[in-house]
Image 1 (tube, rainbow, N blue to C red):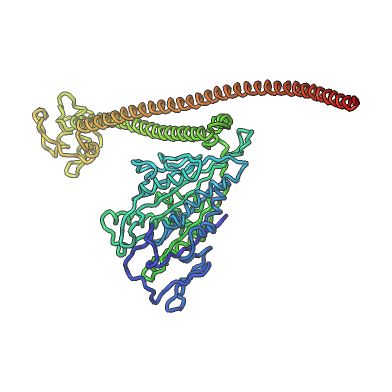
Image 2: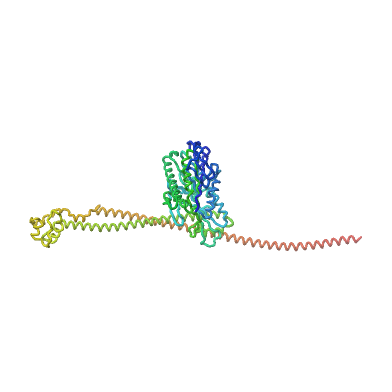
Length: 639
């Protein structure tokens, strides 16, 4: 377990702050009053008329005053994260504080004083270059969270991106552009592009106020250069450099309209971040549910907050007395964050989930052939091929995900359709029973014909006469109604049975035991059937639309596969052309070598001939000299 590293930085007072990114332009009173902050190397305390205020003393890993540069903050707080990211550990660094306290200046910096992000970018490539025994593949992405919606800052129009989670990739943003880079200059150009697309706005406290949270992410994959076993692990680490928007008070910023809406979303996400930190800082037994999913910011940074990552937090604060309450809240947040522990470990992948492993076999052979002439141009070709392959894989994953969602939706619609059919069949059965019950009741309510069915008539009379106003039923009730029985049932009145056939319009009063048999329907049967048929038709139409969508997605997937295949063919063709060019160069080299050997042989023969001629000339010179000497001697002897 490793504690989160927390530092606090106080910006210069507003009178000496440059009008730079995230620099304050608040025109309210900032003169030193009765209260002020006392700062030392690792502690901060609030003084009231030079007397410490109880409960306002804080201790952190580092405390920086207004004279400290971004390079010093980076060296003390972030450089260790970079070294760990190159070695395979996840890392996160972010700036937290109120608006106009210097967060963006700390993360991005200026031309004279570069911030943490550009320093980290250059340090990553320098550190990777020092690791001579490993090969690196680095890709970057840049996103913002604006009004709780994720936008891609590297691609215009790519907005409202969803968050997904998988076992291999963890929590990630689907559809986010990732660019493979080879050097720091490429990354800095992408940063400039992202900053141009970021949301900024003017408030009473800041001329250029950040209206969104930004997350600059670098994914670093590495493997041994001389990797002989394909099952060797690939190290994959994620580095998040986060510039949070500042918490605001409407009374100070004067925000209204769009700015007010932005401020509400900013404060809400920062409040949820504070709740997550509060939960993580509690004791393990008392810790309850951690609300990572309540905000997209905390959802993306879930691994950095109490998870598998090394994390550093730079809390920025304003020294003016008017901002004391905001500064106190920032220091309380920093104090709680200092109690949070992470469990960082090296991330090694043995499957093909690592992009470096998927591309290495195809690129390595081509890379070996590119050593020599035109290597820089061909390296750019490799980078382009890698980016194209990576984009194709991302698009394929996106389409596969959409296809899976469409399949789930289709299964859901089919299940609903089946349930509605079963419900309709069940309702038809209920309606038939109800109709039968109604018909039985109507049969019961009909005046019986005593001449045709005396037995049924007597049985019905014995079942109905249970009210107190009627005479008690005789104990011995036969199957034939005689005159004595009718006298007893009708209290001595003689009933003419022939008259019963003429009372067809007689309405029998409801009887207690038969009232439960009549169950009125909530709606007419025809209306209900029509409604169910309409719902089934709608579901069938949705199912057909889903099937059509699935077919379209499958076609798009096939097109992407064909595009991927064409890219592979182009790569193979480039390999073939390189092989052909290499063979030509080898042939030319062999020809030059043979010419050189022939030239050497000619030089050798010429040297031999020259040596022989030189020997002849020497001997001739010697003979000539001897003849001259003899002539001189003979002349001397003549006189």
